[in-house]
Amino acid sequence: MGELDRTASDKNERRSALVLIVGGVASAFGVAACCALPILLATAGIGTAWLTGIAMVSLPYRNTLMIVSLVSLLVSAGLLWRIQRGAGRCGPGAVRTPKWLRLSLLAGLLIGAGLLVAGYMYV
Image 1: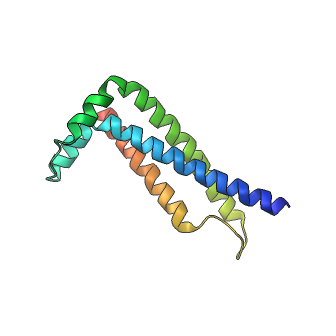
Image 2: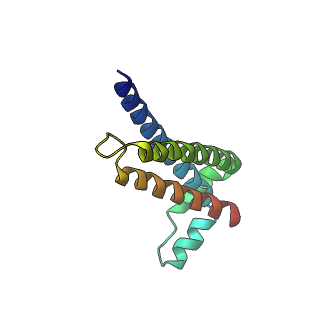
């Protein structure tokens, strides 16, 4: 029965980490939409006129979005650390979070952190 409880707990941790990372990336995108993303995308030769609407909506809530993004990304980093630590303790053949999922969560976490830093620096 303990193994079933652990498996359910692992699924909840994975789901929570995914939701928090998506929320953190979305709010960091709103923060970066005003200044950082247009500069970075224009440098890459990508048009940025579509960001105007997002920037106008998110601009009054910039500080709130930064706090939400920071908290979401920090909590998801803690959950990802717990998932990684739990996967390291499992022996061969044990049921654990797949490596591709852990790497995907890490990539999302890094993208969100990059957007948040860019949004903070370029304003």
